[in-house]
Structure formats: structure tokens, C-alpha cells
Length: 203
Image (cartoon, rainbow, N blue to C red; front, side):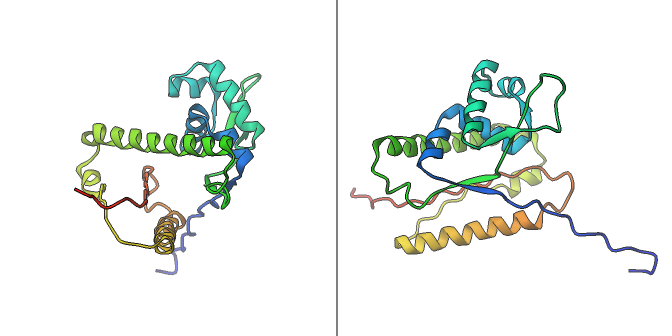
């Protein structure tokens, strides 16, 4: 570096705000449209009910109602920096969510139903995203097809080892989030993680 050059400041990566779900907040979120609305606001930024309706193929009445329900449970809020007049803009209040430690052990039928609906909707969203990538991969430069990955592994682990594996994988993703993009025009990259036990084949 010469005496006339100045060191460029490191890019500031926003803090990752995460919310832990309890039984009440899970019941408020466990609805397919609400989950898609929240995902759209997290991935694409603030929007109006009409914009979200057009994006998701829903009526603005439906998106308005479910946005208000999400707001009542603290998942979204008004964005006062946008909009004019009566136009109401919404933004997500957190960047991610996680299950509380007691949710999987809760025996309340209503909570169990909410857990199952939520997880099945997550699986559906992941499948849709993967299908979209496969259908549009040819529109991307070749380097993206070469960089993308669809691997799977079969391991023999105890529940404790699986917990440790998940923590390690989450830590790697978090490290790259903190590093931030190496280029200003870098696109979003979705990283799906599914880990679960299965019975050995009896065939």
C-alpha cells in the first residue's frame, strides 16, 4: 500500500436477528400463507400487501389479513421509511427462527398439529425452491451449475453426535454469513440442511 492509498473499511454485516418459537408464537405462524409471506419479506425486503399478493398469486385481502396476524405475533411490523399516504409497507422483525427446546416434547394436540404443519410446509418450500433451481439452472452462468450441490450422506450416529454435527454445519454457514459477499452483486444462495434418522432396510 502506498502513502496515497487508504485502507478500505471492512463491510459491515448486519447482526443476524433470530427468534425462538414457543407454543403460542408457533400457532400464530403455522399457516402456509403466513410462512410464505414471512419468507418473502425476509428474502426480498419490505413490501406492501398488494405487492406480496402479486408475488405469491394470492388476493390482497388474504395477504392483508395474514400480515396483520403475523404482526399480532411479532413476526412483521410496519416499515415507516417507505410508502406514501395510505400505502402500508411491511418488514420482517427477525432474520430467522428456531424451535424452542420444549416444542418437540409438547403433548398438546394443538401444538403437535402446529409443529407438524410447520415442518411439512418447510419441506414443501424447500422442494419448491430446489425444483425452481433445476428448472432455471440453464439461465445461470455455467460456474453456478458447477458450484451448486445436491449431495447426501448416510452416517451412523447417536442423537448427541447428530446434534453436534448440526451445530458444526450451522457454524460453517454462520461463518460465511459473517464474512459477507465477496462481490457487491453476489446473489442470494439458499442452503438447505436436512438431517434425520431412518430404519435400515429389511429387504
